[in-house]
Length: 306
Image 1: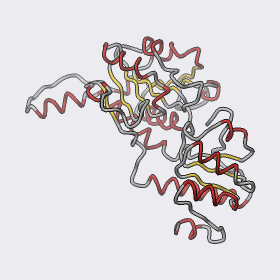
Image 2 (image 1 turned 180 degrees about the vertical axis):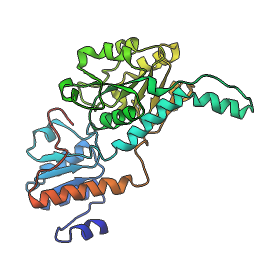
Image 3 (image 1 turned 120 degrees about the vertical axis):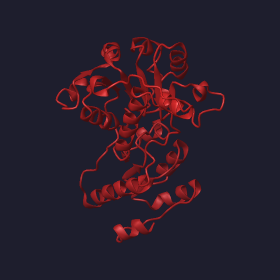
Image 4 (image 1 turned 120 degrees about the horizontal axis):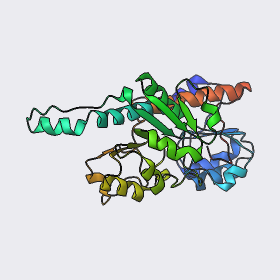
């Protein structure tokens, strides 16, 4: 609260400590900043906020807050897209190197005090395919390109990437099997919408290289998890690096816990020491624009849900 007031002392801030308090305060709000909430509460807040012109949501992914009611509301919505992308791009690099250099084998040999030389892969000679080339996808692609990799992008409008210096080739959904067949690492960075839920399934895993690695830093339910588990268990693909899963926290009975060919992160790849401050700093920059009548960044397309 001190940061808010010191940044913009002429703006009156009211901080709600509960959903009930947020709903009660909504009637006085000209703008609303959602740090943590859900569909039901947000719908109640905006229905009782006749003067609110702008709703900023801290997260990049909006699947747990978007609703038909919110999509139909005239309020302008922005999100935290881009605030956390750099760290997610770094996680993708870490996951690729984890498999390329076979870190598990190195650790096993070290634990056994065994000198066990073997051949490793050079990622500069490999290809990254990115499913969902938004801000997170671009963060992954720029890092892959800096490492000398070939980068392919799969997106709804592939023409938007054709002049991107970090993309060697872009594909629409109908070209997914061609892209997957060329990729050594497939990075899933797509948002979760009704259209993308479960879109990466049996056919997509069948199209991947047997040596391929799937890396998910988008949303867990975009991947058909049972299909992924079957692909991993059968050796249809080599491995997976997962920052997100279909159900979080991952249930104790999930076979993913015990798979040696899976690198698991508990949805914290973007939890840097400064991630809360970074999210607040972006909101404050948006607040300056809103107050000054300037265009806001990260406008959400309510129909698409991101």
